[in-house]
Image (cartoon, rainbow, N blue to C red; front, side, top):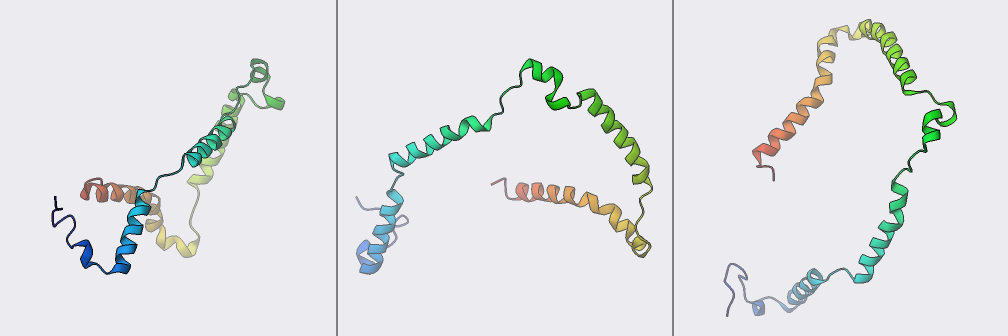
Length: 131
């Protein structure tokens, strides 16, 4: 049977010979598949890299003492709380230099801008139907 005109609008014989060869070559290239050897090589590389992706679990004795006298979780929590309390007064007293005080309202809004860009991305995707 003949093909519908919307699928193949011109006869293959109406195309010049050079373009026929290009068309046939591109169809042959599209039909090629990856060789089995390539698939096996990629799988072997993945299996070779797999053991290095996971961290071995710590033994119970190492977990109890900590590596090389490291701080315990409670000590790290205390230090982070101390750092936060020391940083809060400095953050509250932070000021712009005198020549930039006029831009203070703009500077107050700047940290919110990435949120607006994120919302704009969702709005854009909603408008195109999440293609």
